Length: 459
Image (cartoon, rainbow, N blue to C red):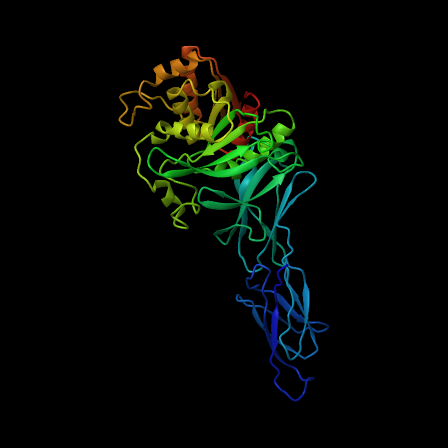
């Protein structure tokens, strides 16, 4: 365990007497290797006190042999004895910033003695219609500089949160539980229960997640994430069905694993006997991006840059999607036919799913559109490509194979009307499909639920 030091260098006004008072200087640092500002420094048993400045430095009038008491809300109070040598001590941050209470209320705490305004924001606020979604709240400050806010009772779910300190956005540096959402890092916590527990690692057999590079017909290697169910490595004679799981416009091959919790959901559903063991393939839907930000040849450049590292024609992702399918069938023990192959996606990935499934109607027996970015695809549209031309004729051919076609969207989703129009076309043609409408909007809460529901229909 790392040792974090509070260094106090005692400078005595007289070197000949250790009983005289003098100016003792020092510095307070936390276990985050950062200075601790505005900490209280008190000579034990006296009224002599001081505070650290913004750099964690302080000066106090004390004797050699005196004990200094160092305290600050959110930190474990510590003591240090003044002597002629630097005094080493630890000052541990011990504030629990998020507490899920027994009644499913959530209490947030943040130590910021000199802040004028501290706010907490996230997707755990109860909205006027009774659902839970995005919001922001002012926290209340006590006389010790500790800010607090408690929500109303919430529902079981995986939630995210951030703090805003005097107008500046910050994550909770004392909490290690974070996820990357597009180009932004956010903290997360779970309210336990059936839904929340589904997204967490349970004491069940676990599958394996691999990050695989594959050759693209566009001339450069690309990366995908692949989940194989528990037992895949041991049952070398067994073949498995495959689900192709596509992300949204802000994501990459890591998104369904990080925000979607796909591996945990599949582990838990398979262990419960609700889902057949399957391989889950999560490709990168930005065809010009070789891999996720920070994990490609652009290094730590601006995260958005890697999305456009290679220029491609419209619908190039859909046109080259069989690169992914063929690689998986040649690399893994799959059952390579439409009855054992499914495809689904959220938002942009839902739009990809609609186009891919109509262009390769004999490849996928199961199709899932999650809050999909679908639209009418007229041939006279200037953005029309070979993949979107004659969409209705391709759709007719797809449904001649009688796929399991599943459409789901939230009643507050900004794509609701587009999906309504898309379904009207399906209804007019008399195509058989399953429709699920949930509350809330274009949010991960829905997409995690959709995955867990859709997966239970497969194979």
